[in-house]
Length: 192
Image (spheres, rainbow, N blue to C red):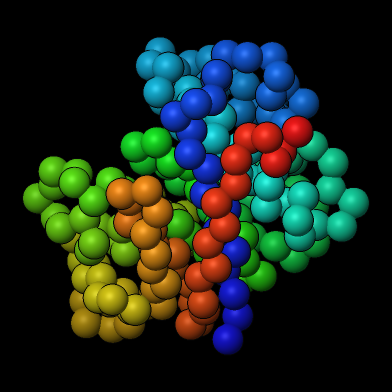
């Protein structure tokens, strides 16, 4: 079975406006962070980029910071030269995550105590699938039903799900074939 590598970073202690992270952060990410008014949102955005850096530094030969990504029209990030790797980024609460897989992947993370009309366990499955496809919330999420290891659209299986928990949050990664999820918690000192 293939493995989805998931790198999780606790962002609560990050100083999002610190120059110490400049070498690890792309121009695109800096611009995205600058547009965010809330410091917590900037921390999570920075954390996603640092989790991506951790993933690439462990798996991509010759990788040099900062990460080089393009954004598809729906906002899905893709690596410019990922040597066959695919990524997906997400953040919630004090956590930011990066999923790295040899096939297209979508990832979501949500706080377990999040108030929602849709149960959180189902929502992370639905959103991870929408990130896999690049459709985002415009992708007809009301036609989707997430079970523990699979997601269905109008009764037909459309993807497989792998789940985990970290720091009071639920994680879910969606792929086209069954895969194991390997979670590694990284911290900023490991990145320097």
